[in-house]
Each structure stands twice: as structure tokens, then as C-alpha cells.
Image (cartoon, rainbow, N blue to C red; front, side):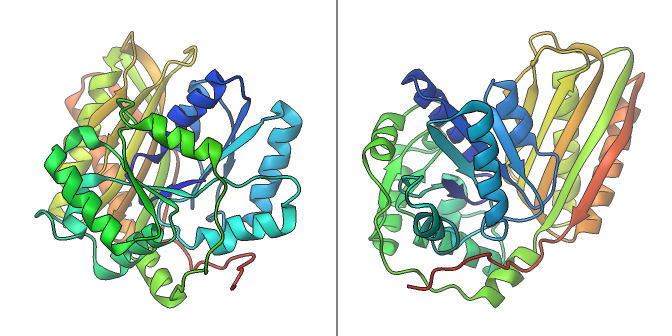
Length: 363
């Protein structure tokens, strides 16, 4: 299981790990997870040819039975040798509510690897007071720190975005605060440092230790400060529109409007799937208010006449602000792009509910 806060780069790391296992001759089953439905992560991983099951409506801790049903379904359909599970980015207490119960109830069926937790280094440098910049509020930062506290392996991801000196300072801070965790420096995007991480997952099992204390009132308050929005939108253009540019324009519009509302972006990610396409997918991400939207996948032939946009947005603000911002940003995009139309097919916006674990091992 690969945890970490929203925007840490979990899905890219998941894809890299799955590709590595596949190259070793192993079959891989992937399980994605979210508070809402219709996920960018699921679409992106499926576009890369992986068998994926999606669990919506709550984290693995609250949907433990659904997690086991997804594993069983994948077992029957593709007989994987390994499962890779990516929990909700605002979820913590995964050891007590997922991996320990899994070992206790289904110990004869699974070997559980060490829990990996990824961090975005720029966000982490700010949280630990090592650089300046916008931050989440205290209750949201509580969840962030708890995710790191329970990690077996802490992965400083996106090391290509920071200097070696910054990486060393952040590593020292993490090792000092979380001495039981091993800290590795990687870049899931470039592949730097992935070999040692892969080796540890292949050679070690999760080591039992005392379950951490979690203040569930504070945890619930922190999640409730986050607004959540998932949408699917049909885009059509006459005669055509540039899909890659449209994604970049929409992301910039959303980021600008959210910043003006003082909404701290946790993660904005979108995919655009051309109508009649053969698996080609454009993907874009924004993980902070002061960053440039990045196309992690581009369409080779970007001039299209129709496509489906999947939009997942998480930010520290109220859900109504997210809804209004998305509607206004889509209107701005179509006004600026001649012949482009946007029809919202599905949209949901809400705050996560209080976590209610199915199981929790206390000792």
C-alpha cells in the first residue's frame, strides 16, 4: 500500500512500481480509492493497460470489506501475484485499520509489504519550517504528520524539483521526527532512486510495532476542512480544438480563481480522453497554488472534435466554492476557445464525512 497526502505523486509511483513488477514477470492488480467516484487515477492506470478496481465513497479503513471484495474480483479476473493499493490522500491510521486487520483475518492469503508514504518535497519543506510558502491549517497538518508517523518507508518524492541541499535538510528533519521510519529520496517521474525502494518492497514484510494514537475528533475536523469535487464533462469543438492546450488553460483558470478565493489547493488533476480514441489520454496536475500546471501525459494528436474530461479537485475551502469555481472556469474556457462547448455530465462536491473504521487493531 502506497500512502501520502494529496498531491504527493502516489499514482505516478504506483504506475512505476506496477511496471517494475510486470517486467519481473509478475501479474499486478491495482486498487484505487477515493471519497467520491469517477477517478482520474483509475482512468490513467487503465490507459496504461493495468487491471484496476476502484473503491469509492470512503477510505480503505472505512471500506475494508470493499477492499477485500476488490481483491477477490481481481483474483478471479486476472489472477495477480501482487496487489498495489492507493488509499485516499487525506486518510491516515492505515496500519491499525487496514494492514494489521488484513494480516489477522487473511494472514494465510497475503504477505504485507512495508507501508510506503510519499511526500511532495516543497510542501514538506514548508510544513517543517525549512522554506516559506502557503500551508494548510493546523488540523489538516495533523493528518499529514500522522501519515508520516505510521510509515515504514517515507519517500521524499519529486527530488528533481529541489536541490541536493534541500533534500538533505528535509531528510534530516524527517529522520529526526520519525526515527522508526526509513527515509528514501526518489523521483517517480524520472526514475531516480526507485531501485532501492523496489528492492525493499520485494525483500521485506511489514514489521509489527505499537499502533499509533489517533485523535479521531481532530482527524475528522481536519478532513472536514477539505472540499472535494469530482466531475465529468463532455467537450466538443467545431471544427476541432487543441486538447492539450485546453487542459492547460482550464488548469490555469482554476488555479487563479481558487487563489483569489484563498483556497489552498491540495490536488487538482484532470484527464481528457478523445472520443473514439485508442487509449491515448492527456493528464494534467496542480499540487499547490503557486505552481505551474504540468501535463504528465499529452495527446500525440491533440486536435480533436470531442472528448471526455474527468476532473478531480481537492482544496482547503468549502465545496460550494469549488463548484462555483469549476462552473465559472469552464465558462471562461469555452468563451476563450472558438467553437468549444462544455456539457457537465456528472458533478459531486462535498466534505468528507467522519472516518468510521470497519476494524481497528488497538494493540
